Length: 406
Image: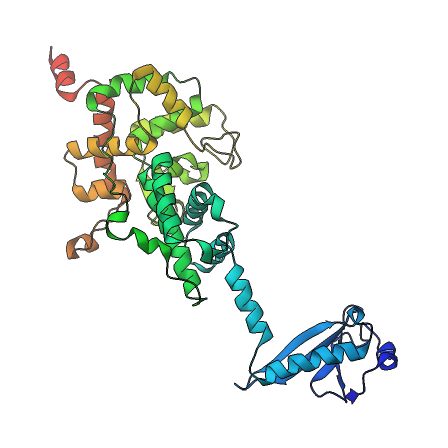
């Protein structure tokens, strides 16, 4: 349908169109120029449409009809746009490129996190935390304006303020975001994080801190004396299982199987993305039964007045323990303590790996081994007894036998 577009013709157009669908009315005077009648609103919009040299058809908005006092003004602008399309210029593509050129680090970060379907919610949360904490001043800055010098200086500053590991993690996040952006906008400069290659990264020394065997009695006593029963039982659970901070903090009663004496963590709740069926030792079972008996409500074993509803960060109770004992450790150090004690009991290396949910290995034999809960129950109890001895809760087996014989 084509007719000469003028003020009278446009005045006759009814928007929204009665059929509820968009309708195009083409101008008989300028080919490719028309007005789009909305099927949903009262909008009337001038458009142009033409086939590009590559064969693609492109429709471009000239502007709302209300923006032009005369149809001739819209026709004149449409003529310029049609000429650009004929020459191969694509205004839409150019606007997309311009938008990409101005896209900020924050915008690219969101696109990266949405595109990475393989990232688990916890990994996404860690990315966001690292970016928000250490690259916050750059979030509103166009990505292309971040230079290698800026990267080098910020890396050094984060290292001094928050530690070497935090600095490396922040720049690895930036590197991943930039590579993702490069795949979608080849006009971006080279990844500035390349400046840190070779000797630019901080060399990290593996942590070795733990609660030594001779410190365990006083450490356990200080944990037992904490004013918060929830914090006490949480730290005891960590010390006697080697669970990771979040695995224990977000423990649900639905994951505690008292009948089978097993803690069942689904794959989505573990760092390894593998389900963990952990046998409850006598100590852990008594601990959880006592916690249940005090009337802790569903769903959390360790509820707290936090956004999540459960215990989040146990730094304060560990700080109290440190003031009382002089023993400064983190939650992960308690995991290291459990693993160290477990290894000293000479349980099977495969059983030790299974109890802390580490991969059993890639060799042929390891791939065939199936570590069932019942297979792990005896080594778990062995580690538990040794931990109780070291904490002063149970007499060493040799002494106990000697006293019984006397």
